[in-house]
Figure 1 (cartoon, helix red, strand yellow):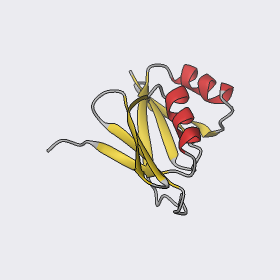
Figure 2 (cartoon, one colour):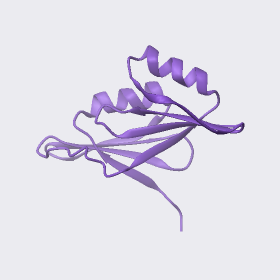
Figure 3 (cartoon, one colour):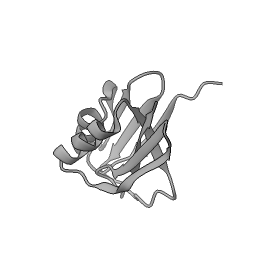
Length: 120
């Protein structure tokens, strides 16, 4: 079995694409209309994909129930500076598990929690 993707329902596809492309360096793998008011974009960097689903006729519930999406970064301080330079708020202080594992959290435009992790 192979893990393929995670789907996020988003309010504004362009705003979400901007976040995941500019902040995390994901690339659009495919993008298409899925109905008269619905559009899907698949982003990736590696094997697993992120599917953004925007349906103008549906209300997006960002009460995510504890869902967090994690991405590995090469340097935590650089990632924090990028987040700040793009106008997003870092949630709390960076967490240090040990000398090899540190991370912090940021919210995407729809309120989903994104964890940026440095593994040395």
